[in-house]
Image 1 (cartoon, helix red, strand yellow):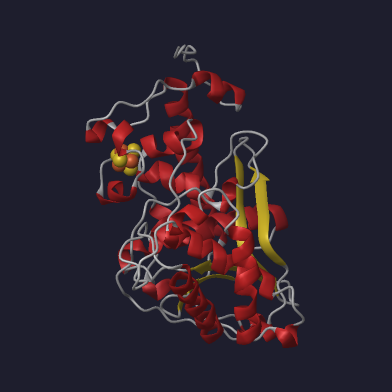
Image 2: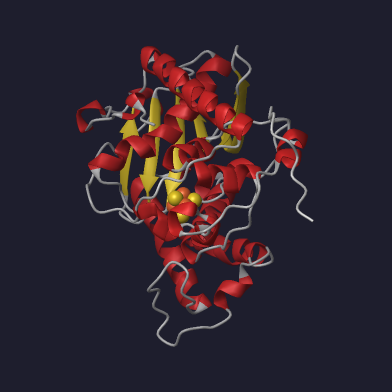
Length: 336
Ligand code: SF4
């Protein structure tokens, strides 16, 4: 499935609206580490009924079977050091804005790492990542164990880098880790969590997302912007305002990608989401979720169950799907 609305170009990168203050409008092009997008904060609070989030839409576009495994079967997946570091850095940046503006210094942000880590390490599977520490502390693989100190230091560098991109003493967010959702006229429920939402005195909206990976290559910019356009669409439909700026902050490279959507584009994007949703509903109704074998399979936890890799998926969990509100005509399969 293609997403025409995602065909972003460098020339489309916007200049900064003055009403939203100084921002970076540069774009460095360096290789990006691709991963199958993991379960995201979008799933942190269960929706009332089947819904579409940016992550799950991306799953279906990447591989319909991956979508099924994650969303319908809800199969467990391993955590990775890279993903947990991302969660930690997001937590620090969220807490940073709890402080009075003048106190949002690099040192204060570094001080927030320890308490954020203390909470995070209590989550299932996190401490296990460090069960075997390496002497040199080098991270050679997203799932390779390394020393906690080295890993925390790498998170600290990302936090430091944030301060090269923005001056948090000059920003007063309107929302952080904010749930945004809307039901479209056709019944499709869109929902997701925005890292940060800024509102200028003029009412102009800026949507900010922190990325702990590298700036994407040009071919992957559209993928990065897909998530941001999703948020822009939901905000437009709920607040009646088209976001003046979508801003992705790449903390590894210390670079930013900014984009200004317009109404026509969001209308097209809405149609794209409706088409994705229609394809998902068809797949649920028939239980036909095709695998799509790509390089991203290297990061998929479900190869053993995937026909593209010689595996056999479990029977479609029709009962669980129906209980979750999906329309499915498939008979319930007894597994015992
Ligand atoms: S291994 Fe590849 S094709 Fe199979 S479910 Fe995972 S992403 Fe899809």
